[in-house]
Length: 217
Image (cartoon, rainbow, N blue to C red; front, top):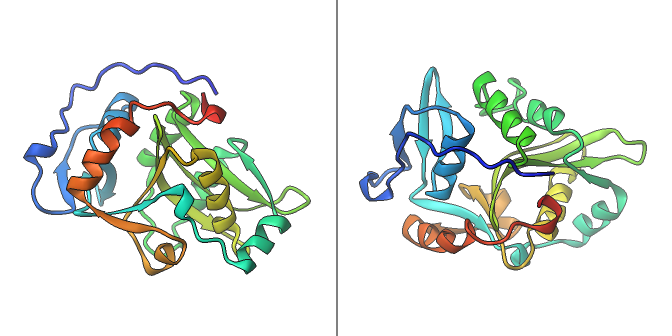
């Protein structure tokens, strides 16, 4: 996909002004330039009711692609499913936004903003499919240089979201980083660790200006 250059954002995301809390700001907008600039500075949006909030966790969940743990059962699942990339972005984000899912937070504004970023070549999806092409899992997020900021994932079949993560790790490669926002016991079992905000912000300085995976250039 051809990545379209974006105009600068009128909003300033300054980590020096952020509180010692996961939620660091409120307001601004979901314009493409605003979103990409926020990720470059280590922040991401997540609404709370009608309020647009911006987050930069004090403890950040990250996955170094080479640290991904692939169990024997997951390796079998990798062989069982087919994986595609950027073929069903809207279907993936809609599955992730399913309001019946616990903790669902993707509203219409978030959905439309990331679909627009996908159309502009910045947001990407990884889709897990059965042999007949049925979508059974996947993930989506934003690619900024060598950083992939994961937003959400879903599964409708055993290991389907994990298989998408395996493929994502292959695409991002050894010189990149996958941001998972927070860590959970499930993510930790796959190799996700926690970095302090200070370490995360320091590490992404070079990543966001680094080369993107060839697949997405």
